[in-house]
Structures are given as C-alpha cells and as structure tokens.
Amino acid sequence: MKLQKTHFKISSIRSDAINKATSYLAKTKSVIVLEDLNVKGMIKNHKLALVLSDASFGEFRRQMEYKTQWYGSRILYADRFFPSSKMCSSCGTSKKDLIRSDRLFICNTCGLKIDRDFNASLNLLHLAGSSSESLNACLRREVTE
Image (cartoon, rainbow, N blue to C red; front, top):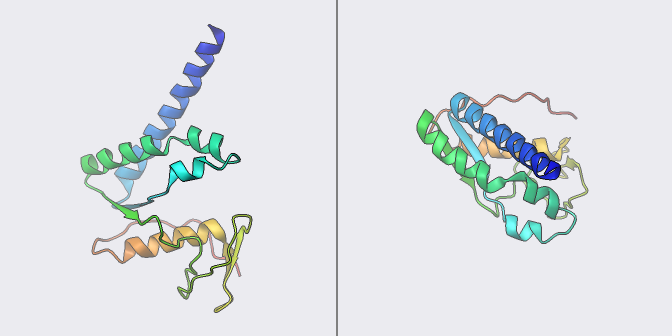
C-alpha cells in the first residue's frame, strides 16, 4: 500500500509539472516549436530507455496541441530529420561527424563555439522565425566564443 501511494504521488507530481509547463508556454508564447522525435527508436537504446519513458513526451505534445488552440498560439513541428543539433546557428553549415557525447558545438566554417543544446534551440528559433507569424521567444543564455 505504501509503494502504491508513493507511485501515485510521483505520477501526480509529473502530471502537475507537465500541466503547468504546457499552460505557461501556450499562454506566453505565440509560436512554439517542437521536434518530431522518433521516441520509439530512442527507447531501444538501453541507456536512454528509462529516462525517456518517464518523460511523457506524448502527453506533453497532446497537451501542447490543445492548449495552443485554447490560448490562440501556434505550434510548429520540426521535421524528424531537421538537423537542429548538427547545423551551425550562425552560418548554417551542417556538421556530419557530431556525436552524442560532444556537448560543445564547434563550427569548422565560421569558428562558432557554443553549447550543443543552445545551438539546437537557436536553430529551432530560426525555423520559427522563418514562419509568417511574429515570435515573442526570449533567449536567456548568451553565445560563448
């Protein structure tokens, strides 16, 4: 019974966090970009399987879809094969030899040195900016050189 209560509590905390995050994003952002990831393929990696299955990507996406309709914001999906991590956010060249353990993106063309995840977020921001709608995204981290 104690274990059941603990699992219920953890489930409620996760559900509440997803609900609050999706509500905040849908209310405050006019355009939201989500990556269409191959989660089933990613779960086959035994190192990522437990973390990804706990993340509830499907529930997050479902809530984002209906809440963006409620609050009048727009949701865009980056294609599964869009190179958000492998493309330089400064010059646009793609880097084919980037591996998962590389946490710093270094462009061979323009010399940009930036955190890999931040570079991907900038590429998704450029993707959203290329749409016809206005964007009110806010960048909080600075590009490091």
